[in-house]
Image (cartoon, rainbow, N blue to C red):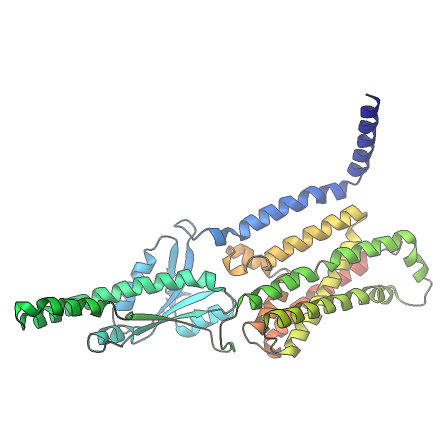
Length: 414
């Protein structure tokens, strides 16, 4: 009993110490709760194929001069979980509008029926090699796992509509040819008719990208995953940096630095520079490993460097900000992990933004993670150069400036 009493006394003492740090305990419980909520919401699109209550929107451009494309679109619109969009802002959607929707990230995929779709289907009666093409305009950063079901659904419905449209003419031609021969030859001709239906598909679905995206082949998993986890990893410097600042405050290092004839922002910038350089080194190592181990192409090095510089600035600025809000190591550790994991998830580092609900996709624009990931994908996946990534870099520098200015305003050297 004596030992039990001692154990309970020690336990009670440590519990009082833990709960004395209210902020630390709040972040300790808030972190897993927020992560569960955020991840459950953003992953909904990965496990939910869409239903009548929350359908997936599929923009469609109908340029077909015949009637077959309209029949395919009608059947697509009847699929549960799919909402076909043929209009944009009250007008029939054009190809240019569709390309802009994909380029601007408002839609991940658009279906385009060309003007000769019906004509090419009907040509199959006279030309066994004729095929009608449907174009899927897609963002190359969207994974094949997301596009493949849509492509298969469009192809399946279009093929069924095309075969149904050709069936009467085929039957009529087959019967006419059958009646021209003796009954003994009929079985051979029926075999020929069966072989005719087993040849190549009448419809072909081709995946293309909007103009301006210099993509020769669609990206592999490395070009999509390496940028996401690089951004995710870079922001872990926040905890290390904030804890270092807290430690130096406790040891009185900052008070001694105040004796130097330098403004406080300059002193703080000198403290941050090593972490900024470590961030850049981290990005370089990540991409170098991807290049050496996986053969990932590192195109447009200047554009990559610009995004990396801006990303490192944003991560370092966030470190300053967190250091001003955390009063204890527990608070800083919890707040750093909470912000890093939550913003990484919302920004698309863990789950692509195109599978998230619309409001979560909008929230991604308010995180440096979302802009950094978009910047890297603009270079590595969409083929953009320096001119194409300046909005991403500008947004990251804006985050860095806000974080740093608020941090300097709130910072206390003692």
